[in-house]
Length: 375
Length: 230
Image 1 (spheres, chains in turn orange, blue):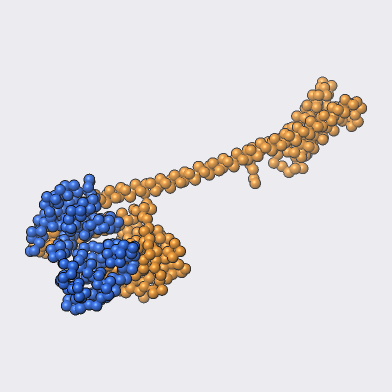
Image 2 (cartoon, each protein chain N blue to C red; image 1 turned 90 degrees about the vertical axis):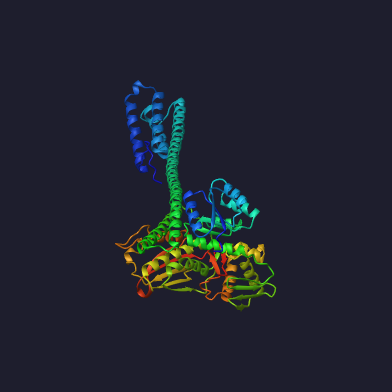
């Protein structure tokens, strides 16, 4: 592990440490030898032990042991009589020599071990510090994510309030205009303008609903109420709701007979199909053919598809239409319908994409979701 | 007009909505009274005894659900609930608490008055359980267990007969899956809407001129069915 410890440890090859230890001791011995007339034997011994300690803490155990032996020999050679000889004539000098060697070795080894501990502690501290920084970063990120969720929830709550405040007057407008339109309206102009008021009230309501659905999906507030349901029931419900929009279109429905019951949120999946039918009806023009199909996909997936014969969507724009308020060129926008569909499919751990439509023209929106058999 | 004297109590805390409803319903030939919250709605109900109650769900104090429950303890009067579209759970709750139907806000007046008329028709001629009676395109003889649609006899299994009889007794009313399943198969089967769907599909094949676009047994998505004998 690459430690980056800021101590005086020589981050060098072992041989170099021995050379340095030798050099340091040589210089010290030379100095002490020069000053010998002024110093006594004890001072020399202490100076050499100090050198061994320094070598131990900077160069480690091996060099420390080596320095202890070298210092012992130097002590004997230079500072125990007879000088410049390894011979020891007096018994007290022998004791002094042995004590010196033992002390130097012991102190050297202990110092080196202590230094090692210090380094280990520092490394541990550094690792702890790294963990602490990582933890702080992670908790900051978690806080940020929580903050984001909170702000999404706040947005939803705000939208909820706005939706209520918009919907209440809209209800009065719709009820009022539809009351007026129940009776024969005098002029053609009035008739048309009243119709515009009612249609626009409906459109505004549709828009508010879409915004609410999208905000709830984005805030993760949509809980899937999954239950066992057949694919037919889901398609049937979407068809029922889309019926007024599909007048004048030919809709063909194919549900593969080998499909087992699905475990999904039927209301939401049906809403996806409704949105796709709505777009197909809008873009394929009157008399256009629309095909709805449900079949088994790979593994436990089930694949839904709604295809039309409309003008189609250019391949390079196909992934963008699932963004909210996406508009292609001067075309009318897709509003939030496909963004909601995308959100619902993803909430079911599925995917949604676009291919060419019927007979190579138009649009075919397909989505795959787990049938939920394993769930 | 047969409903000319029918009395409708409207309970909603939004003044503009009640204002429009008063005008709209009066011009459709009903007598209208307004209450701005559940408590005063209940008082008006006791004092005036309307033929039908329209109530909003979210109101200060006693809300729409509470009002449904309190009125049901007193009377079988039809209750129509005004709700927002996405709130299926509350709708089902209101229906289970005794509401007969719901209309999503914002609503068109034609739709609202059609629902009101359907509910009033049911209560104006409550059928006796065992006597033969007619309702719209249907004629039923409970003792002989015969059902005719537009004069054409239809052969039904005993369970199908029970269901059609239940539908006829509750015509115009939204019946939740739970209510239908418990009424016909007992409370133990209340959690099997998929079973009911298949059963209703078969019944439609026998009764409806076009089973793919049913006109008698109408689906209320994820809630239940509404029977309209026309």
